[in-house]
Length: 411
Image (cartoon, rainbow, N blue to C red; front, side, top):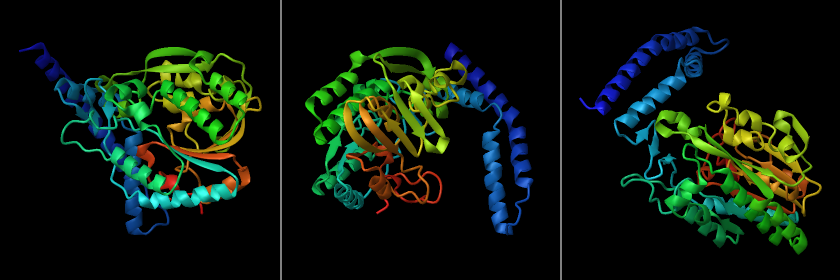
């Protein structure tokens, strides 16, 4: 018997033993949670609530969860499969992908955005839509035959409808994801987000676009470009320390681990960051404000638990973040509407912009109206910057479930 066959048998045996060890406690957790009475509810509602509560308790208290996921991923890897828990491993870069994009009707978004752009203009603010790339090359060469993904089809349809509606657009997909090699260079293997180097490049591009559209003096624009040049930042590599969102679904033994690049400014900084939902209000250097959770993100003890992508810069994914930098060269007020791809971008961009407010419409409260925010903040430019995966996403939590969150402008 070959060594590979023996290894498969050993892993299969351990896998079955682990399944047996978790079956009874998991079932017990479910039964205990289901057995608790739902107070003041009708019988049908009470049963539904009990099932939901029991399922949540079972998932949160899943015994040996990490070991189970890792062993399952190892078994799938040993038998030569490339699909694990809905995640596809592509060749030749071992990149993890999820193909979930749905076709959409782009014209409904164009009408809403045109209305919002006109509203911004009436309040003396320019509007710019920036299309970020998906973790997939623009010609879908990374996915095998028979697998479909509509993300870039949706993007092309949507950008066409936006331009027909005379909306100012900037398409960054080709620059970051033209080929599979570009995707491997710019995106994490185990996460659906882009690497910090790619986000840093995007911050520089965005600063230049803001300076041009807001007619910033040339000297200030050149100073901003210098602050956002690679020579002005240190670059540290933390090897094999990051397990991304897709890697946590498959286990590190299937996906491997990502290196994490940390960029810090060489120049002196003095700025502030405020996150109202978390009662964060900090003033200090770039590290003391934008990187206040960096030590936690880079800690080996929490590398598989903490989302290092979100925690490293800004500290998380919030409904609202406010950056102020009185010494920044771009003397403009910028409102950035973004998803999680914007997190490291906003941190880097904050060194060049005097006021930068960031809104994630997926997480705002029921009574939040973006139009009112524009009226109160009085930005010089409003930038909407999202990746294809967020185009048709519903409100993730709360009362707006079922609505396209990124296009809820409050008009």
